[in-house]
Image 1: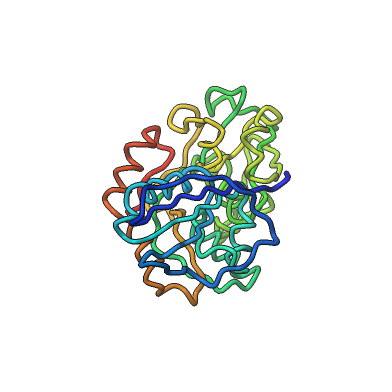
Image 2: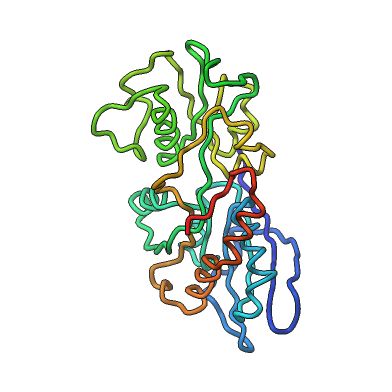
Length: 283
């Protein structure tokens, strides 16, 4: 998959209402040195997945940022790798797309010095199919698409295990599980790992596929209606959060942005907007 970004400039300041513009984002862009204040307004650049993360940020920009004297520039990324790379390089001030297990894996693999604030929302993982209407129709030897990144691969296998479709070996940490850790597989399912973003549009090539909530949203899939099985959210470790560089974790503007993302207004926006259960507040 060719990776690309869509940059949405969503400005809210005392001078006027939010503005929207599109511009290309290239690796040659100049690095930032953290949020910058000008005229009493602090500019923050945030990298986010298009849905629901950028949608939630746009709500903040349009409705809450002006009073908080913040100006948000939202850069949308369609993969899970680049947002941390550009946060590390300083091209953005924060990102909003990942959960704790994924962040921990990225830090371990890449040595990032990042700080994650508290969880904002949960997107239930689901198993979907272009042909099956019920989990009971899952065929013997069926091929299942799962994400190829470590955290979401394990999370997908954990979803199947939570419904007793497979079992995992004793002692295996779900967030690190691989197909080699499957202990029992009554239907002899075959697991194929592909990039998470590709799974929704590749469902026709598989018996079923495990799809992340944000990619289901982008593909127009309704989890509450179309999922064969859906992740259980009780005590979920997969809440998505705002992440910044460790050196910036106490920056007043970034702390304020995180507070806005945990506001009653944002909670109501999530509940009113994602009525199909695809996004659930985590606070």
